[in-house]
Image (tube, rainbow, N blue to C red):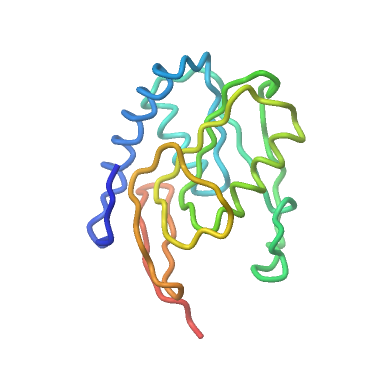
Length: 174
């Protein structure tokens, strides 16, 4: 995991390799049995698919679309096309790995966990993110992250993909 404020040189593929290594260690050291990966659309799904492949996880991957679970519609707006979530496995008693691209305010992760608990009660949830950036509004922290960066309030980072995956940094337009 990289603690950094320099973000222009972040190599997404190298970060994914590091995350996969740390996640494999986490799964083993915490005795997670048959963990299921769940990606948050869209970037989290791309990242979860890469991690699933690298870790050789056979369980089908889940996908969450948390649009209806967000608490900040008035601020971010609603996307006109909302595809349903797909969780092709039982949640109850399961070890889950929740994957997202960017951890910022914590609201996306809160919404994702609310949706997960509507499906059942997992044994554990491990949060994995590609980039953990400054600006948290809720007390949510990643178990595993690729890079931790500090951005000004008017700066943003977005994962573009799916192939190749790359990070785009930009300033908010006023």
